[in-house]
Amino acid sequence: MSVNKVILVGNVGKDPDVRYLDSGVAVANFPFATSETYTKNGEKVTNTEWHNIVAWRGLAEVAEKYIKKGKQLYIDGKIKTRSYEDKEGVKKYMTEIYADTIQMLGRKDEYDGNSPSDNNYQKPEPQSANNQAQDFDANDSPDDLPF
Image (cartoon, rainbow, N blue to C red; front, side, top):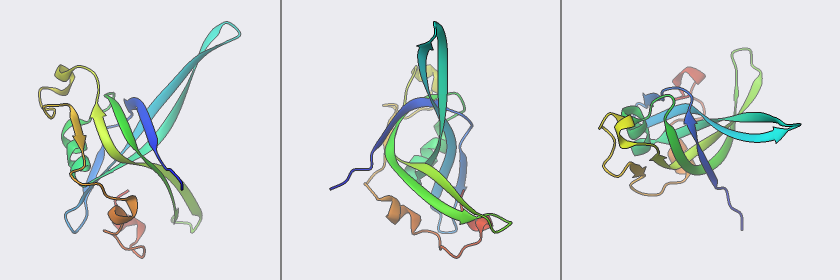
């Protein structure tokens, strides 16, 4: 048995980049920061870790409408690493967090009165990252990919 589960609480680093595949499926990508603060030699030190968040379908549509840079979120999902070749043919690796749940934190008025009534959105039905990724072909050029 194995488990691939990530829980993050932090802040959105940039407004989500939302794209729609030819099939009409929405995918959103955005950077997300989590910070850890501790004291070292009497001085306060803060380390920030950046995460690449990927949200599909309904979550991507919610991200497009309600998620903005600086907003605090709770995200749970799974870690996925993928590889691709850049324009020079060099193989690159990217680790991403595929969101299963996104909950908006903070005051409701921070969301301009446009947030879902319960400030929480989950996918209508659970889907694995493998099922989500089948909407594009591995032979697509990097310009056709949604990230």
